[in-house]
Length: 79
Image 1 (cartoon, rainbow, N blue to C red):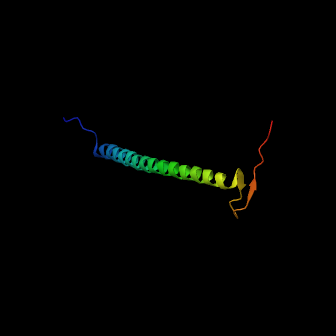
Image 2: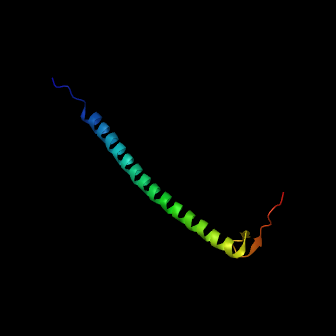
Image 3: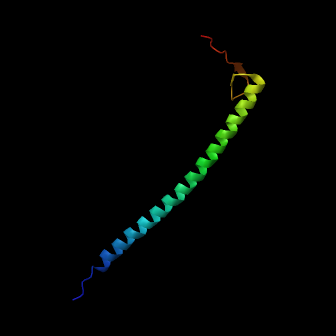
């Protein structure tokens, strides 16, 4: 007699393995997308910091209303 699991049991194990493979592949794709987005985020943050320096050189220390572009000068506290 040959030692073998049933066809149903084998099919169930194969389905589980297939699902695990698909899920781990999807996770890899998502991690790659996450990595790319984190690089993009860093680039945008860098550009924003550069623009902030340009605006500070032109207007001094200000708070900008992002709705309409108006700004208030930030008063420096003297101790």
